[in-house]
Image 1 (cartoon, one colour):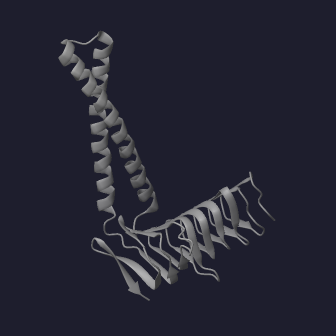
Image 2 (cartoon, one colour):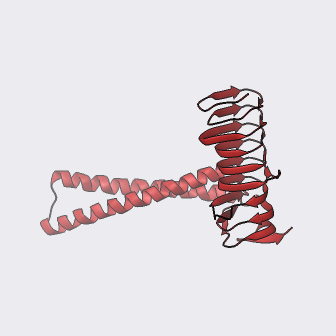
Image 3 (cartoon, helix red, strand yellow):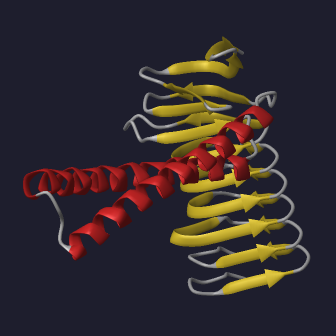
Length: 250
């Protein structure tokens, strides 16, 4: 039957659902097979150690340790350690993001409305997730550094004008300097980690195949090389070629 919103189904083996899945959570130690698909309403989540096979995936998060095979992915965050195959009657990926280590294959990517759609291959999705996390942390550090530097500038001007600082301000000066050094050390460590992961995956090769149309506003990422489509592309594959992404006819 159906799995309704708010419910969680966990199994050490496979999960089969003959009805519809709403904003529920499915966690499987094997594969997940949905006869009718999932309309997650922004809350649906599937996590499988093996494959995920579903009629459609809409407004949901899905992670598969194997492949994901479906007829449509709509406004969802989808991650597969293996390939993502969207090749049913509709065969459409629109909105959200789809990540795969080796291959994303679909008939249509994006939409005529210019819906932002991200397709990413060529890097282990777990590594990619950590890479993006590092970028966010470094960006937050940059904002904090700017505020600390402003504080230091004001305090040093005060020292120059008065010749000394009150005990409270002196402590603030010391803490600001210490925090700046701490951030710089953390950023160095994070940058080294990101570079190490990038080099480790530099030889990974991924491919994106769009049998019919890829619309504008589709973002293609292959092993950290990014290409934004500004016009419609038909019957093409996208592959990495050095520091570029090449579009090749099918």
